[in-house]
Image (cartoon, rainbow over all chains, first blue to last red; front, top):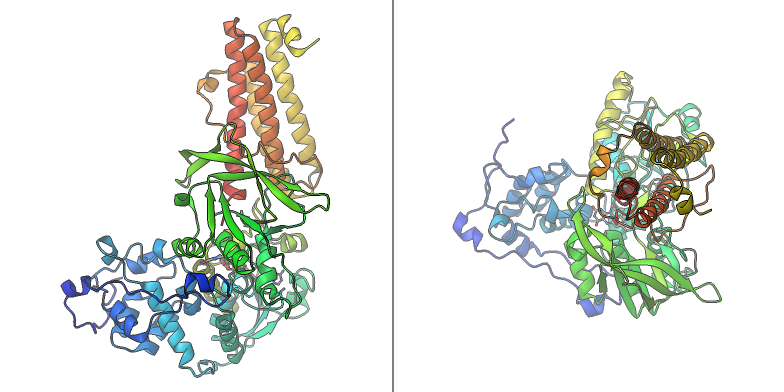
Amino acid sequence: MKREQPQSFNTISVKERLIIPRQVMPEQDPLLRSGNFLEVNLGLSAEQAVIEAQRCIECKSPSCMDGCPVSIKIPDFIQLICNKDFLGAADKIKEDSSLPAVCGRVCPQETQCEEVCVVGKRFEPVAIGRLERFVADYAMLHSNGSPVTPDKPQPSGQKVAIVGSGPAGLAAASDLIKEGHEVTVFEALHEFGGVLVYGIPEFRLPKKILRQEVANLEAMGVKFVKNFIVGRSMTIQELMEEEGYDAMFLGLGAGLPRFMNIPGENLNGVYSANEFLTRSNLMRAYEFPEWDTPLYRAKHAIIVGGGNTAMDAVRTAKRLGAEEASIVYRRSEEEMPARNEEIHHAKEEGVKFMNLVNPIEFIGDEQGSVVAAKCLRMKLGEPDESGRRRPVPMEGSEFTMDIDMVVIAVGNGSNPLISQTTPAIKTNKWGNIIADEDGRTSMEGVFAGGDIVSGGATVILAMGAGRKSAIAINEYLKTKVWSVV
Amino acid sequence: MSLKQQIDSMNMNEIVDLCIDQEQQAIHLYTMARDQAKDEHAAIKFQELVDMETAHKVALQKFELENYLDLPPADLKVTDYLMEPVFNENLSTQEILILAAKREDKTAKMYQDLANHFTSDKKLNTFFQMMADEELRHKHNLETEYEKEFLQEG
Ligand SMILES: Cc1cc2nc3c(=O)[nH]c(=O)nc-3n(C[C@H](O)[C@H](O)[C@H](O)COP(=O)(O)OP(=O)(O)OC[C@H]3O[C@@H](n4cnc5c(N)ncnc54)[C@H](O)[C@@H]3O)c2cc1C
């Protein structure tokens, strides 16, 4: 279907637009911010946002939308910004994304919408992510703190349970409540938001954004139940049969930390990224002693890995007072899966990068605390399936370094609790739930999406999966027709 | 008598039989593990290993070794420094991959050792070299799978 070109509000010629420089987003000073947990990026001003929006050249076939996993109508919202209709722009984004203030902050735009932006072929791409963040923040601020609640729909008389309050669960809840269903979100932890609250630190994504999103959903009628572990507090069958849920969405995430299986991983001072970040983010270790969660202030903390999780952990370690905080990564910087911005910020904050290095053993003292890491130097070999060059150990390159804290951030798997307590839900060999593209699982009425299906991925993909399932759940509740997975 | 001395006194058929026996031991071990595994996916993984070793055994029985003439891919050494899990019924897929890769590594080293020992006997040297390379190929495949799933670095 041909897309209708949005109304243009840009009065500047294309030639002139191309010479406007990409607007720089103000940031906290690196020296200052490496000692606090306040947000690093400070957001564009309204003036900057309009100038940045004017850089869009209004392509006839805009590739930016193809680069967005949920096809946000980017050209349309950018034109609304040119017209200073910021609330209109926010509404336009909301048509396709439930969490723009989150995605504007954490999406890897450089490998999505901005990577394919036509302006970016010769100049710097339009800062789509920063514009998204600007309008989302503007809308939050100008709703005067009171949640934006659409008119209440006719009750459908049907009950839907959402398990997990990460982006997949929240997106599904948001779309399902608008259809008049009774929606309850069950969350194992004591805060809602999934990785967005327990994983991604305050300095990258302030928790108040999630709290506002949850408050909006509550105002729309979504019920939230915390400290409730489905599979332990109650099983899926019990919820369906005894509590009368007609359908269920599982957005359980991939929260099971993976370890390296090298000697010394059980020493004191060796954490999984999951535990380390949860202690800091959710149990407020960074506000110790006001909050009673101690986290060791290291002399030299090493974080093993090269993804967003590793960057979040290393920057957290630095903020918690580590004298030296280093990334230890098997490959080179080019292969790092972390967002460029996070790598750049980490470097500015004084994080040391030890690339092409792989720990092979952690050594402890008599008390069982880690005191050193034995490592190997690596070199890059042939590319693997993903196209990244493979690291291979260099003969005789072994060395030992003094450290007193380790955070392992090599990836996460899925928690086996649901597959163990509900065998009717089929999983693959890695423990991910098997679901069709609308999220239908092998158990009637039960849908799943986000990281629990795809394995560790991104916020926007999880959100997109939640929305897709919401459509399918709605259809199922109307027809009660179930196609077997 | 050491393995090398034993082989010195064997003819080619007996040597091949010895290697078949090695493969059979692996098949036996993985079959037992498959039957004991509590997790359905662990059982599937063990079955894959049984299939891999059976294919190797059949090739040896038929003496169809042409497929093994290609040079092995680089040794990734991904699992070399990892702790070897002890066989039990609750092994995870991650542990099974480590265990199997380490086993292939040990067998490859044994064949390589034999190849090095029999440098003056061209036929024996080539045979053991091919066996060693094949075991390294298995190790490579297992480590590739391990790397893809357990070292995502996300
Ligand atoms: C540290 C870190 C940084 C990241 N940074 C980025 C980034 O910058 N950009 C990006 O796009 N992506 C990033 N990601 C990935 C992204 O956060 C995830 O892909 C996304 O959150 C997945 O969403 P989800 O809804 O599927 O699951 P999650 O966000 O994991 O939420 C799942 C929720 O379900 C709950 N739950 C699990 N089991 C049960 C149960 N049995 N009963 C009740 N509740 C249960 C969990 O407690 C959790 O709250 C990052 C991930 C991590 C760990």
